[in-house]
Image (cartoon, rainbow, N blue to C red):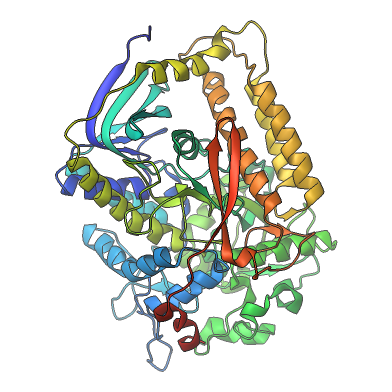
Length: 607
């Protein structure tokens, strides 16, 4: 007999209240559906606010000093995104994305977003890594905050219902279709069930299994694992993005992100000798040879006049820059605390305070560091997940009927590496599409479906076991061991030996996690929450590690130093699909759909 629980009914249930979830809520409400939005934390506290540099969309607003417009367009953005993702992207997803991103940005402006402006009054755009032209529409260095503020105001105005500080742990199924979700209130531990005709997952990423990460405490892979347990397919889970400029010093800021906008506004990466090491030609892949400045003066000239397109190599894609930072440190040329220097002081205090006000304030408040006078010490930090739930490009539908996913939790757009700024346009383009599709599906359903209480009972026993156990493991201790192992053996540079050791450790920790013990009750008990989180993180880590072992090549974020080459004959033509097979993880290499002629020709036209 299951204990009493609260129950709510909606046409569309949206799990997550970042940009993707809010944009989905707007679409579903405008389609006439009742909508419930679930926050693990508080409304407005989403990782969307961390995307500070800008939202990528080819508006082509920027001109060179002679007045000529930069010839940007969706076609160039498409090529840049496919190249940045090392051609592991779903081409149809990228086509939709690059075509619709400008419309979503202009729509955001209509909702009330306040962008920086060019002298002519158009939305201002800045350069970013891997983008051929200035394409990031921005609000200083707080674009994500402005986006979440704007979407939140719009979504609340539509009349959505919000349930804050609720953790969901299981999707409920009826005849193979998703009919709702089960979880509890974080404050009291009281149970709650949400019945829904369609569910949209917008739960973000899962970086908390690493020691150094820009992700906050919510990023434990709940949405990913709920989809996996429900039978959804996962895609390219080995592709974890390491942002090249996470703070490594002072300790109070370790892992905190330094926006790519710092480099977009002219910040230089230097080693302990004061050398701009990104000019080392060994750090530039053949794909980008000749597209970036090859000597410092050339890069400085671009910062001043932006006439030619020879940008500083600090603006190469994130996977390239992260590997360069790692190699520089490994070669003994790192700074005192094990990273490299990111220096923007040469741009002057006035320029920095105008273009990077949030960065200046953040570093002064958290690290007593004045970035107008001294460089930052940075090292790659776990930031984003290109892999995730496999969805259809048009509808964001998973392989489970009634279940949709958008944003970071969904895979396909970014391939092996995400270009900076593509995340914010991603959540708006596919948040809208997921909301539209979920609403359309909900309208075809005559009822909410039947809730099977045996599914609730099974999950409830999992949740309560640590509180009733007389002996067992501490979930915090297991989490710490997992973080150390993933940081050491499944980080930037991977090897067969390291990944095998990592997988063995994860399997051992999973066994220990079956016997967790936490004192106290459900009320105000973070240790109890951690017990469920750590199980999700362990399974997610297992899938990541198994996929990294199977892909025997280096592509984008997957860097196997024992297979330090691109294998285009096989791995360049295959994604990795992970599925639940009883208690085991089943992984298969599945052939990519080839580029159609109308898109293949773009690579010739944009050379």
